[in-house]
Image (tube, rainbow, N blue to C red; front, top):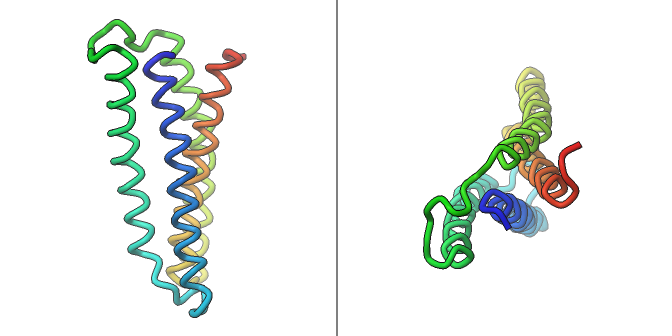
Length: 144
């Protein structure tokens, strides 16, 4: 498995776990508090930062183990890896843009910060998950 494919798998799995953790924490807090009043900032920041850090660490560790202790060029990204990464980014960025536009619209109508932030978070989350799925599928089935 190529280094870039491992990174795609790690990013996808970690994103799904981070989203699930965030949703569970917010849902748990919403059991006793109205949803727009839930303390969401801490869990959101921790799942974003934690997801990034965990993805980096797991990708490095998996790379070292898979490549026999070396992080040098034997398994460096080639043209196909770059094309797949670019395609995954293009697929994912659409959801990021949608989340941003809806977030701006929510600001324009003076929505509660909870809804604005969670719309942006959903855009980031969908971008990561859908882009990750696109990458993994492209590695398994090839670029069309």
